[in-house]
Image 1 (cartoon, rainbow, N blue to C red):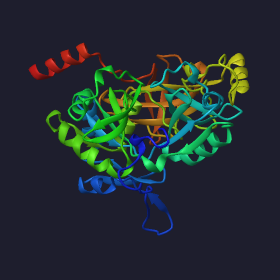
Image 2 (cartoon, rainbow, N blue to C red):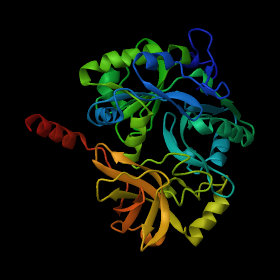
Image 3 (cartoon, helix red, strand yellow):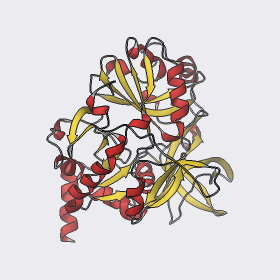
Length: 403
C-alpha cells in the first residue's frame, strides 16, 4: 500500500467510512460503501464490531453451501489496513509479531498473532510484504483502533499509517472463485499462490490489490478496490459469477464456514487472556527469530508447558453447541464453549473450547450442557472440514450428478 501509488488513489476524493446512528440515537455504527447495495439485495443488516453489516441474504445455510460447492462474495470492508514503511520497517514488524516476516519474499504474506508482553493475543492478523521495507497489516474490525495505536507505539524509524478508510475489501471464496475473477482481469491468477498478493491488478476496469487468502477453508481471493468504487467491483463480480451460482453472502455464513475450517475468531476463541501456545498457534511463534513483544513470556510458557489447550469437538447427537455453554466430564465442569454452531456442510453440531490437557486427546468423550441437558460430544482433531483436492472435488461433483 505505497504512498502515492495509483492503485491506492481513488478516482475522486476518498470518502471516509461513513457513520450512522442506531434507533437509540446514541450508538454510532459505521457503514461500508456497499451498504446501499446490500439493502437493495435484501440483506439483513446487524451490528458487528461497531459496523452495520449484512448477516445474511437468502439464508446462512444456502450461502454456506454455495461457498463450499461454487462461490460466495462477502463484503469485509470493516477490516482494518495499516501500512508500515520506510527505513527500519522490517525491524518494526519483527518486533510487533510472533511470526517471522524476514522470511517473506516481496508479494508474500503470513498469518500471525500480535502479543502483549505477557504473551496474550492483542489480535490475529495477516501481514504482507509489498516491498523490502513496506508491509501491509490486515487486522480485525473490532480491534482496528487498538491495533493502530499499538503498531504506532512500537514502530521506531518506520512510519505506521492507518489506511482503513481508503479501501474496501471484498472476499470472493469457493472452488469457482478463480474462474469468476479471471473473467474480469487479464492477470495470471493461477500463478498467484496461496497467501501471496499482487498490486495494480485491473479488475473490471478498476485497479485493485488482490491476495489469494480467505477465512472460509476454501480457495479464494480478497480484492481491495478504492473505497468509493467498490460497488462497481461488487456488481461486476456478481454478474461474472451468475452462471456458476455465485451468491452474495453475509457474516453468518462466514462464521459457520470458518468454524468448520477450524479457524479461530478473535474475541471468542482468542483474546488477550489466551496465548498462541494455548490456542493451536504454536507454529506461528518463532522464538529463535530475535526479540519481539511477548517473546520472554512465551518462551517461559513453552518451557513450563501450558495447562490448557483449545480443542474441537463434534456432537454425537442432533444438538447445537453455543458460545458459553458448559463442557463437562465426570460430572464436573471442565471448560466452556468458545465457538459453536451447526455445520451445514459437515452436517453436525461442532464447537471449540479450552480444556485442561487431560481432556484434549482426540476421541475423549465429554458432555455439552445444552439447555440444561447433557449432550454427548467427542474431542476431534481440527479442522472439522478440509478442502478436497481438485480430483476428489471432481469425483464428488460427478457422483452428485449421477445420484
